[in-house]
Length: 591
Image 1 (tube, one colour):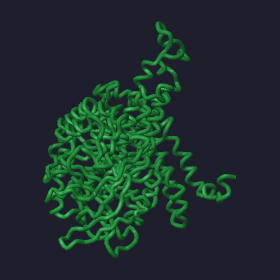
Image 2 (cartoon, rainbow, N blue to C red; image 1 turned 120 degrees about the horizontal axis):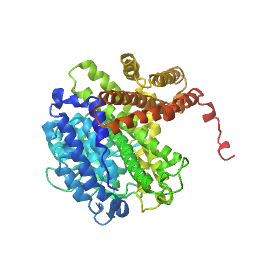
Image 3 (cartoon, rainbow, N blue to C red; image 1 turned 180 degrees about the vertical axis):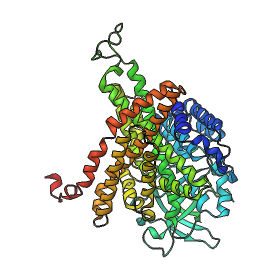
Image 4 (spheres, helix red, strand yellow; image 1 turned 60 degrees about the vertical axis):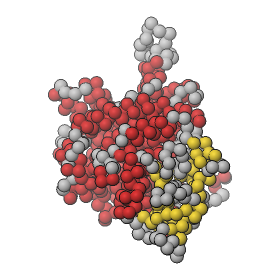
């Protein structure tokens, strides 16, 4: 089926719930009027369904191909044309800085576009997606000379960018990297080493690829405190010469086969330092945090496409009769959407997808406030929420996005297991999102190990202030009792961590994943209460899209009845501690 952008839901969230229709009142986003935001939603939806989606299946079937003689990579048929259309439409520049050719629009709009692109071709979307992270890192940490050399062409999409972290002997523990950087007399560096799993490391979409590479300077500490960041172009901008940064081969993957995942060999390549020596990790995290939010949108995008496909199938597939009597008496059987178990799978997809979209756009809106609001306190509070929720968006949206793709496949039954239907590709493509840019377990450890203690606990206090402030200001809030219960359980879980984690880090490790889920479910509950409240108000006033608003009322009820109660057993998991988890000795595993 052809993808249908969730335009009505996006407008409802942005304009009626989050207040993004007022972003144009901020000087930085003066151009982001409601009319412009609506136009972006409509045009991005057309691009996704008409230009990007047709390349998805062929990208999966063909994959990328590597030529060992030229060390080059060819992308699947149609990718270059679709990428060119994406670039010519100005989509690579959407929220990029104006002074280097960007449009300077709100980050929230990029979240919207990311979801649509990931729904229709995740592999293709990764080429401009990683480029955006490179833009942010260079803009935040690069010298003016580096900005002048690279940003305009990266923002225009004429060049693409990569993030080169992982090596064969190390992944998350980057202190173990061996890639080295030796100074030249002219201020450049000689980069030598091998990186693996590099998205877009080599391809034929553009003529130049700008690699951001982590490496160690001579004499640097042999830890993460000794890592520096370098920009290493495929083609040297000043001379046009080929830099010896070559693809050594492609990874053979379960999914995202249209994305060129490369082994990269830096064979004495020329590079330039980004930021300060031995401060590469802080510079890279500018790129990494942005990438983590983008990956969250990947999980949501795939889940939305899976829902649309499985809903269409359930409406048409005839099998058995409804338990309450025939609903299609003229036919041989009823459509399977009448069956409670099929509806259970569809409702879980729909309600979680809409809740996850609300969480993502809430975070994107806070990101915009953190950089554009005139009030310093509002900027700080918004930044607190963005920092706290970034690992939650990445982990929860990719966990549940993947689960929802699985539920979509289950709705199709045997058909979902075949390549005649797109669900099996969505499931394969979605699996990686829970792994890259830091596995979801690492996201959970980042949340409990770093974010809860940052600024003396201010980040989590900002979240509790947001949640409790809503209940205080809205005494008639829908599902107030259920939401208050969730907030209380999140407070109990936070207190348990504060009391136990400092004495035993393994307690924090054991509690991290369930704690992240408690936070995600609570914040999504807060947003479902807000959505239900807006729906109630509009219906009472006789305004808006009645079908959409009524669906929000039912969906909110489903969320609080069927999904939010998971918080109780998650808290039981947390407070039970690590003992049973860590009790096995080596002999027990195969006992």
